Length: 249
Image (cartoon, rainbow, N blue to C red; front, side, top):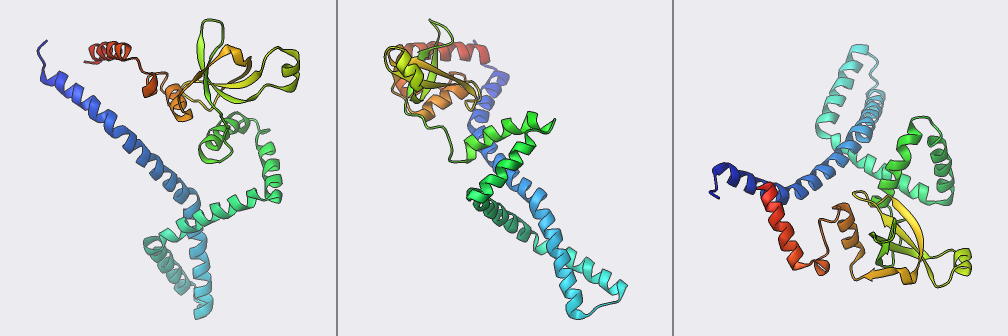
């Protein structure tokens, strides 16, 4: 088949887009986070700081004239927003750090739990807050699920194999009531592995996979497209690549 400019352009544009998108999205997320901090924390801190600077300046200079005071106030605000805008951002970062230290303490944890319980009882917030908290906890905190190894298990029915992460042994009652060793397994869902199902199965009913946790999560998030290198079958891979090229190009 004769290649045309349109097919060549689409082919290399898609390749270039696939190469540059991870970097662009990473930078965009970082910029978005810093902008969020500046707009919703730093900007208000800058206003408060400018007000305080104005107050002490007027007191120090003993300025009582209304017009003169208004002129000084405008001058300080303009100067602050032009040259000292970064002060609010730095103070916001420090404030978040101090808040993190506070909720890490026993007293802070108790207070924050009370606040969270109150939030999840509000009509609209209770539909949004738990999901957002689950994602942010998974991404930002150290209290992540501890996985020992990756396995394949027949779930949700016999003959259908799902990727699972071993989290613990089975519950005591199950261990005493059922034959063999029981394992608790978390089955992550695609494309958001922070959600999924928790099941308990016998050790004899699983197949241990020689792949890392990161590889398992990438496999899940991509819907099985990104396979661990050690688990790729060359013949199958070449067939998939040919079919993909035929569909795309």
